[in-house]
Image (cartoon, rainbow, N blue to C red):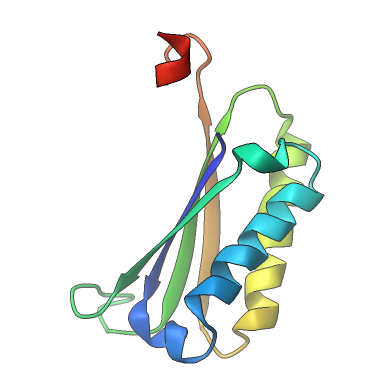
Length: 115
């Protein structure tokens, strides 16, 4: 926890390497001081053919951040802005860059170390 899942058009990976994208998101998340760095998980899902943005195959990046509840709206808003800012720096030519943050409920979250 947390999980940052990056959906994107595969064409953006011609502009920056997957490693650069993953490490950039990890760095921003760690710098937020909201998480233990060792707990941050980042994944990349590039889409080659099966996607539409505004009815067309346009370049896009969307980050789905899933974090444990307990952070303030201000903390989450700042994290969203910093990740969007970093992606914009890496991909100024990509017209659609966005993120949304969802909270996990402590009561319903479970991993194998909790069993």
